Image (cartoon, rainbow, N blue to C red; front, side, top):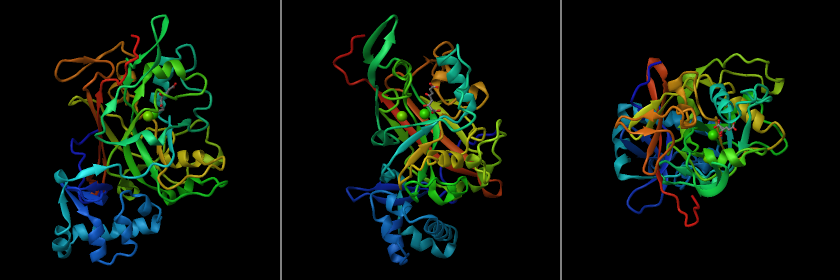
Length: 402
Ligand SMILES: O=C(O)/C=C/C(=O)CC(=O)CC(=O)O
Ligand SMILES: [Ca+2]
Ligand SMILES: [Mg+2]
C-alpha cells in the first residue's frame, strides 16, 4: 500500500477547527493548505443562513444543526474555494495557519473507546493473557468497548504528563511513574445530531448522526492498566489523557475511501448487520521522534463506525452533540502495521530502533509522537486527514517509591 507523506489539507478535505489570533476570541475556521478561512465574517458577509454558529469557541452549535446544514455549508465552501470568481472575497478572510492558535475543536460530551481491530485484539490478548484464547468470547459478536473520560480529551500539542499509579515491580506492588507508557493510534468519530433517550440508532442512520472524524492518540500506561483492569476493564491506565487532532474532517470528505466491510464469522446479529459500506480505507502513519515506525491500515477494522454507533445505543442509551467514540487501536496484520508500542516492541522483548540510533520499547520523557493519516480522494487523488501530536513530560509526583 502506498502511503503519501503529505497528510496536509488540500481544497477538498475542508476540515473544521477552532482558532484564534492575537488575543481575539476563538472561533470556527476551515483549513485549506497553509491557511485558515475565517468563516464567521465570511458567512456574515454572504448572509449565510445559520452563519452565527461559526462565531463560537466550539463546533458544537454547528454540529447540532444536522446533516442538511453540514452538506449545505460544505457545498458553499467548495464553491468558494474552487471558483475564481470568489477568490478576492475568500482572500480577505484568510489567516496564515502559522499565525493562529488552535484550540480544542469541540466540547466532548461522552467519550467511548472501542476495540475493533482484530490484529490488535489478538496481539494484546497474546501479550496480556497468553493462557487464554486470543480473542475474548464476545469479540466477534459485538464491538467491545468501554466508557472513557471526556474531560481528559485534549487537543494536539498538549503536553502529556507521565501518569503515576500502582503497578507490579518484580514481586511487589508499588506506586510510581508508569514505566510502560504507550500510544494507541485510532480514528475518532464525532457525533453531531443527538439521538433520543430509549431509542437505538440504526446502522443505516450513521451518516445522519456522525459529523466527522478526528485522529486519536489514546495514551495508555500499560503497567497501571495490566494491574488494575481485571475484571472491570481500563480505568486510570487510560483516563489520564487522550489527544485528538485539531481539525475535524467532515464525513463527506472520506466518501471515496468507503470500502466493503470485511467478511464476518458469525454473521452479526440483525441490529448490527451492515446497511451500507462504511468500512474506510484510511492510511495511518505513526512517527516516533521523527521516525515512522508503523503504517496501520484502517480498512481491516472488523467493526465499522456505523456498527459501533448502533451498538453504543443498542440498549437505548442516547448520544449527544459532541460525543466522541474512537475505533480502537488500529493495527493491521503486518508487523509494521501495529498501532501501539506494546505490540511493536512485543511488550519490550523486541525493541524498536529509531532513526537516531536510539532504542525504545515504551515512551521516555521528551519523546514526541505524531499520528497522521490520509485517504483516497475523488478522481484518484489523495486527501489529507491531518495529524495529532503529543510530547511526554516527566511525572508530577513527590510520592514515587520506585
Ligand atoms: O485487551 C486488553 O486487556 C486491553 C486492550 C487495550 O488496551 C485496547 C484498548 O484500549 C482498546 C483499543 O484501543 O483497541
Ligand atoms: Ca484505545
Ligand atoms: Mg485514553
